[in-house]
Each structure stands twice: as structure tokens, then as C-alpha cells.
Length: 163
Image 1 (cartoon, rainbow, N blue to C red):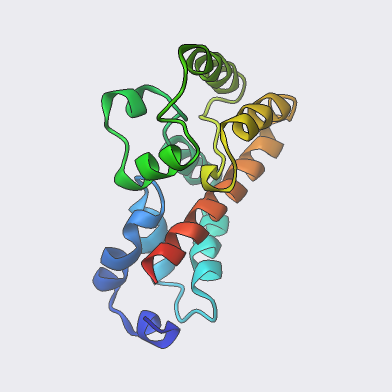
Image 2: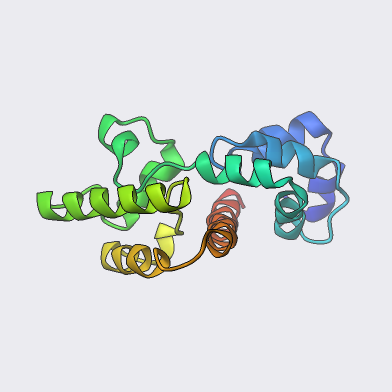
């Protein structure tokens, strides 16, 4: 689909086409729809994120599942999240690795009030664990910015999958 065709979609068709890019947050795409026409689709979508209120940004971050967490175990991940976590080997953790993920996820969520977000398609389980440990040292504002940046990477790759 060309950018001109994307810009010509009515709002409902735009949301239907791109609404799943942001984990459980079609409101981002709905917000982006009114910002068209875009010179760059990804930039326009992320522009809606950057224009969102602080509360909306936190809601977007909190809409993401914990890595190797409850949703992965009980099978309630979105198809995209399940495939992404599997690409990093998170569906094949040893009991010790699972325990480490669980402990770090808990420490992270307790410290920041939202789940750890990383674009798992760009790393592996060793890299993810190292990133959680490193990012636990950040302050909350830095982590919000980092989480939103990682969401951008997830969306960029998902958008590429659509084309």
C-alpha cells in the first residue's frame, strides 16, 4: 500500500488496517488518523504517541505484557506478542531462566509501576536479562522514555510485516 493510499483511507479503514500495531491500544491509531496526511507513516503514528498525555502514554506502556510472564504461560498473548517472544526464545526458558525473568519483571514493575518493554525481535533472552538489570538503575522518567522508544521499535517492525 502506498503512502498516498494510506492517506486516502477513511478513518475506519485506517484503524482497521493499522489498529493492532500498538499492543491493545487502537486509540493511538485512531488519534493518528486525524493527523494525516503523513509524509512518513511510522513518523505519523509515533507522532500520535508523542502528542498523547502522560496518562495515555502510561496506559500504552501498561498495555504490554510482561516478558515470559503470566500471559505467555496461560496463552493470552496477542499473536504478534507470542511470535515476538518466541523469536527471542522466551517460550523455551529453563526453570532457572523463568525464575530469573519473573524476579526481574517483579523488581522492575515494583520500581516503575509498569512492565519492562524491549523490542525482543532485536535481541535474545541473554540481552533482555542484561537490559532489565541495566535499566533498573534508571529513573522513572528515563524509563518511560525508553519504554516508548522500544514500543516505537516494535511498531516499526510490525508495520514492516504489514507491507
